[in-house]
Image (cartoon, rainbow, N blue to C red; front, side):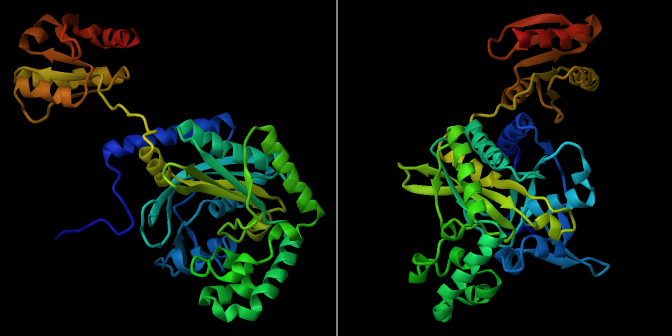
Length: 424
């Protein structure tokens, strides 16, 4: 029986996994510098969390979630995004009671959406995301945006384009919603069924429709920036000043609409702009949310965050040759001569590993020459050669694989000697 991997998923093989570990390491390092702590939430949650948190009118909830009944008849969904689970944990564990606020959190892990698989878009995909919860200060908005930009730059990407917008507070959004309904209602029958359903639920989603994006009414639709009240306008202007102070260039796009219902005020996307490729690729996005924490049973506090695709990041790095070669070589490869040495080799390997060295040996009974080939394929810095003579004398031969030079080393000092050589 030939069982194949599910469509829209991928096996991350060892050589590729090293690249993932590289960018994940940068994500953790940037998070540490910004004082964000890791949070790990379940891969599956109650379906209601995403219905209430993400929004009934979103494509994610209506079309893309992996939902099933467990044996107790409860509706369970594989998480399609990271914010709602983090907020659920924030509320359930009463993290709003911690003295250090806002609470700064980051996550790394798989998400699941039933979408049409294509380049950079998988049904199981991995996200790095952050959430800063508990502050209404626009300075935290600027910090979150700066953190995302710093992460991409630390990974080696250039020509980044930051696009920002404001979706306004509740009052501003209500005024804009009424204007959109009045704008689209006379000709809503010309739009797709999804847009017709969204007209009353969330007409802002019509602006993000992929089917009707070229409809002439899209060009003349009321812009949210024209409906911002004084408070929302002042907030957005402050975010812009803070970004300018940080020397982070940006472009304002009044048509920027995030795909989740919980966004308010600051909204942003980061794109990769490469003139020589003639394309602009969206790498990540995020924004501020108000009301989400209350909706899930928490206090009246707001948050802001972003989520980015690790797959899309790696594609961009590889396409632009910005991903360094990630070495996975061994410190030492043990070459054994004879059955006794092969048997005793395991104990010596354990001693080397206990000292923090990476080490391995042959387990296929290969001849000595073939063992050296294995050492070469393993990109070993040194080979350690032992046979009956070495076991009796307590000495081993240490060969430098780059120069071919050999030296005799006492077996009980082998690990410390290799560690000393690594420092030179």
